[in-house]
Image (cartoon, rainbow, N blue to C red):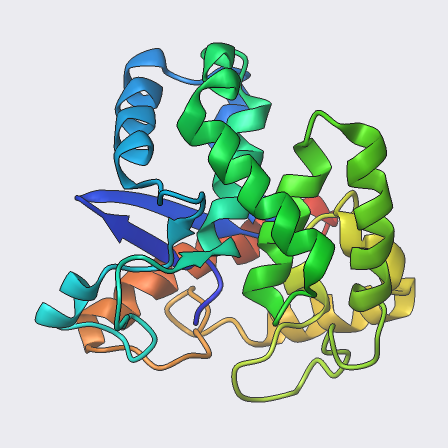
Length: 243
């Protein structure tokens, strides 16, 4: 599954980014648009499963052209991806704080706590959902205990790909730490960051964009994802002072 996985539900797209959901616009302007937020809340309220959690994708995705990972046998299986990151982003907003006491939100919150207490991340996409939730959960004592568990997993050999020239669907130093203040930055060295930045600059193509490293369903889809990842690469280069 690609960086920036788009979860398409009822026409709404929610985009995953390092450490959680792509909230750059909200961070920049310091607010969440109430009308947009209200629509998202109505939708999430309607798809929350009885015991908490949101599905990764619905079976109906299989009726259309889709990437290989967009498939599900059932609609009633919760997934930490995207539940963790969605709750983490909702925690950050201060426009509709009354939702924190609503039944659907409480159920989702309980589901994520069960996951982080009993399991470990299965990979990058689980990991960024854990991280977004734990960084913004209001119960800081509980969250810090589980952040220690998460950090132990993140620090294991192989979780962060250190080789800047590694091929295939891997997640490298700058995927985990796209900014100097990223949570994962403490797990990489200055020399590793410098080496990966140099490689990132080298990988820019003649048309100005960057390539993606996962399978797409069509040339059009590849162009769309290249546009997204090019913006992310430029943001990373700017964050580290390269441009």
